Image (cartoon, rainbow, N blue to C red):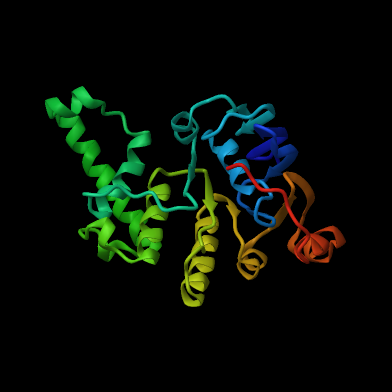
Amino acid sequence: MSALLEVVGVSKRFGGVQAVKDVSFSVLPGTIKAVIGPNGAGKTTLFNLVSGAVALDEGRILFKGARTDGRPMHEVAARGMSRTFQHIRLFSGMTALENVMVGCHVRSRAGFLAGMLHLPWTWREEHEVRRRALEAMDLVGVARLASADAMSLSYGQQRGVELARALAAGPEMLLLDEPAAGLNMRETAELAALISRIRDRGVTVLVVEHDMALVMSISDEVVVLSNGEVIADAEPSAVQANPDVVRVYLGEDEDAEAA
């Protein structure tokens, strides 16, 4: 089976800090792969490189067999890769539904001029965008919040809206950056079940996460970073038994990450 995502020899430096160094791994379609490591290991920088938010210095990133490194984030998204962020990024002054509908527009055809002219086909497309947004919200469990001001929602609810927005784009791959951050135990358990359901619907998932119980319960494979380098890439049970991983998680100092 061919990999959906291939990261090949990727490196990124910020000034004098080597945030990511010669990182390589792949993600098979229909799987959940986790990226873990201590604070400062380079996880968020790696995510930013994969999604196109940051330009790499060396290496290649291939999605569905085509290179995406060097392409802007919106083009990567249009190819079928959506992401959430470590810090929630919702639009103020908009309802939860309107925030989710923004995610659909990465694949919509209507431009600014067509929308201003209120052409009939743009009405049909907007209706479809609304339907897809509500469907994504229902999957995540936040459909009842559709008309609420997004900024008035609780932290966990805002997380759900952000995830629904990423799903509304209809991605083939979903990148989740610390989705369990700030969630309680019940919410984290619900998140684990949701991520598994998303995978079962045919969406491949790459997730950065600190919650090891969550990672080990949902992941098919785990890649471990330390000081910007890969020290393990295997099934969860093998990663847990890896002496290098055990050593890193016992508290060795890590260099500070630059992003």
